[in-house]
Length: 107
Image (tube, rainbow, N blue to C red; front, top):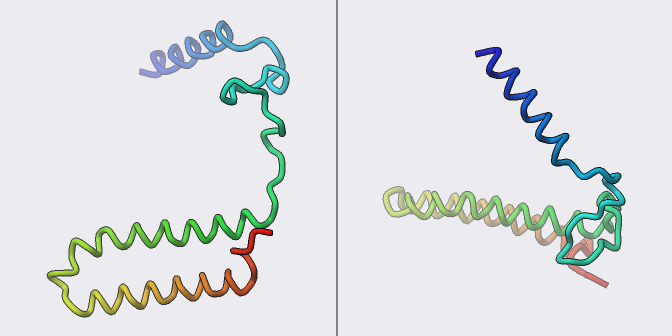
């Protein structure tokens, strides 16, 4: 098994050497809908994107909790509804904070 694993690694490395682009990675140019990229791939983003990203993640996590909750809310009853409203209330506190700090203001 070890010989097979080492042979697979060697074969894949040889395949890579045969099929790799010979130019430097930054001058080879990645495919971007047919056009050349205007920025470097590791260019910096404006700070406002980070706040919006956290806001998106908060609502994304909310959906992760709401789908299973929707399946069991009928059998759990009112305590499940109260827990979900408490969870949504905490998320709204985060949205209110982001709004107050100006994270939702674009200009």
